[in-house]
Image (cartoon, rainbow, N blue to C red; front, side, top):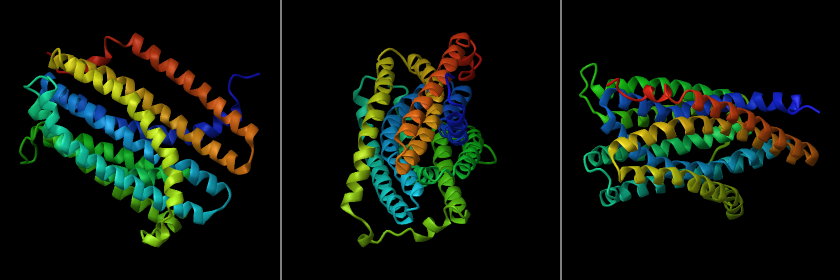
Length: 351
């Protein structure tokens, strides 16, 4: 018996690869922020951005968890041809994600003064709060984008999301250089420039994906039928989606917050230790987030099998995707082991 089922593997890769490209794009925002800041501004600036990102990402992934309720429900409804159900999941998911984005933005802004009471290196805290004060507002456009993304992926339409993410990353990288050091007559903004570049790129992602979904024949009808009228919402649907999304959000939050807490522990030693921790974590999270491509593929495929009442196929899909992730992460682990001396040099100045 073969270790991987060829049929399920091909179907999973067809869905997973575009999602993995999207995940690469999303994770690369913070990855490139760290690399460019470290190369242009040095270890202290990298430590400041790292500390800010540790706080931001903990709440960011908590918000993401809520959005993961959308694709299985959309996929199941799509397999049954239930377009009213898809519309309902779409608009309820939009409200949940937007609300979560606004609330967590407020939490980030209100909680920034606490950083001065956690015994972190005083030299980096002004840059950390300056970075966070801008990054916090990127949560709102990203959560709206995430609604469109998960809705589209639930319909197995992934190419539009991938295009939006790749183009946004190119914009983010270019703006990082332009705004950090000041080019084309613009003032040098330092770490504020990095955060501003991320905010602009995330707004672009949202607008670009909305335009794509409004024009594609598979998704256009749902964009046109979208409404926020109060009588179109039901408590039962909100409860059902939160029953899926909230536990996912908590699981992701506690998993990532452990690493975020480690950054603060490193800060009790020195700014250099924060930077070193962030370099390692950036590389680890990069490969980890690629696995979300497999998880989204599994979610969509399992949703279809659930809709078709094919429970044997449902189990086969789940087990096959677990095996694929095992192979992928084994390769990633070996890459880290053998590249441990060269990979960190991508993040720091040569001196």
